[in-house]
Amino acid sequence: MSNRHITHLIGGFLDGELTPKKHQEVLDHCSCCPSCARELGHYRELKTIMGRIKEPDPGDEYFTTLSENILNRTELIRPAPVLDSNMTGSSLSRQNIYKLLIRVAAVITLLFISLFATEFKPRKHVSQAGNRAIEIRADGKNIAGWTGNIPPGKDDVNDISNNSTSE
Amino acid sequence: MTDETTRLVLLFQEGDRQAFAELVKAFRHKIYALAYRILMNHSDADEVAQETFVRVYNRIGQLKSPVRFDSFLYRIATNYAIDLLRKRKGRVVAMPDEGELPGNIQVALSLRVINPEKNLENKQLLDAIIKAAEELPPRQKVTLVLHDIEGQSKEEIARILECPEATVRSNLHIARSKLKQILSKYLAI
Image (cartoon, helix red, strand yellow):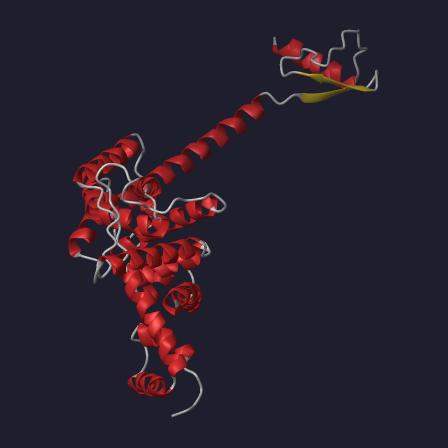
């Protein structure tokens, strides 16, 4: 039996976690070491006291009220979605459907945005004579705020002639 | 955990509110007791009990394994209790006293009573230990309560507190050492 104190083994001894050999080692040591025996006794007593601390009994009425309060507080809360696919397949598939619907809606929205953006995109018209860019809409109206007369350039002449022929 | 609890958890995860009510009924005593043992105070224990179940309701989707429901529940309860302990630091908390507790709430400290003098001595010792436990850092205190009062294994406590088992051992050892010093003083008288 070693003369080294066994305080480091006391926790394991109290919790029954030591091997039978170590357990016996603690007992043997304590039989001849008053210091370790006292230490073990105090820890033992402490564990016993802690084990005796009981909560008060607030009574059945309190627990009924507690349940009611909890249920009232959760009444308006939407239950959380379940993440575990193994246990709740139906919930998960519903969740997947929602995700799919959101993706489809996002794609449709993007398509609409790109379609309208193309439809109303202003095209640039370069006047040769004035040597300045004027934005005109598809219907030919000036949207750049410039209201002066522009001498028709080569392209303009072609556009006018095309328009007149088509009319 | 019982099969019945697992069944209720599964039903609850599918949206059955009645199953949730049954789970509250099954665990409300345990959670109240745990909270009381950590906080030593009825109103805080009540707050922890209520908030724990509301959080369970909100977070049940995060529980991947229904057989681990009790760890999940205890984790939520202990985390909330630890938050309260941290908030309470610096605030003076009265020792529970039978005369001051509301209604029929009484502290049932079932110490071994040999005679009235011994009873008083035990009560003083217990008060001193409870007071010393109040001074422990929250996680040490919770570890001590879960292990020495609730009787949870170190493995389970590690799961509840989401820390390594070595940390549980270390916290338990430190907490016990501090309380043992108080006890030693009393026993030395």
